[in-house]
Length: 301
Image (cartoon, rainbow, N blue to C red; front, side):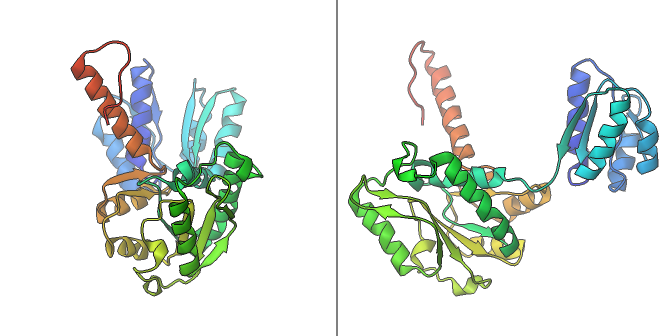
């Protein structure tokens, strides 16, 4: 792993040692400084093999009990081929495009029909990412609510007719391209998913007075196109601090940059609403342990 070379290799090493095993470490040759540091840090505790593909090929000729690899799919195929000679089991942690981001985003937004104060109010991504994201979001929506969401027992309803009217009015007043969606005021104040696309690449054209730039509190998800990570961070910082902020990326540096350069009530990477669930569980645990009661225990949040 080149984006988290120290943590990826050391965490695996620690779990191996705690299980009573010995290990040989092979850092990525792309991260030269990390490779050299690991080689001289605690040489009496573990062996480090430095080098590029040739050294890795030679190393793989040995018989191991288990191989753990983090990196690209192309190198992983070579690792698997070499390991197959000795029938060595392999654990792979690979990069690539992951539709789970769309699934987690959809769940976080449309849980309880979007009526959650920490539900994502908008998505910031490049146009290329948006085009890849939308098909996966549609798949996730159908997997959650079926082909006829109005008949789904899992799709929430809007709490009152007044709130239903407010959401429909937001759609009428705002500017953007609607992808899917339907509504029915009579049947259980039903509103199915609306994905609202702002096609402009210039975020300055999106006014703070735009209804969909306010707290939506419903199943409507605006997607705004940005040119760069800096554009997205500036867009967030120019507005009131969000109650929750979710960063989706397979690069840890991107997540760290968003965390360090923004301010929000809660922050979570590659998931949504999870930080609130953790806080609720911690509050419940603290209340349960301090009261020392047995049997039924209520929520501490």
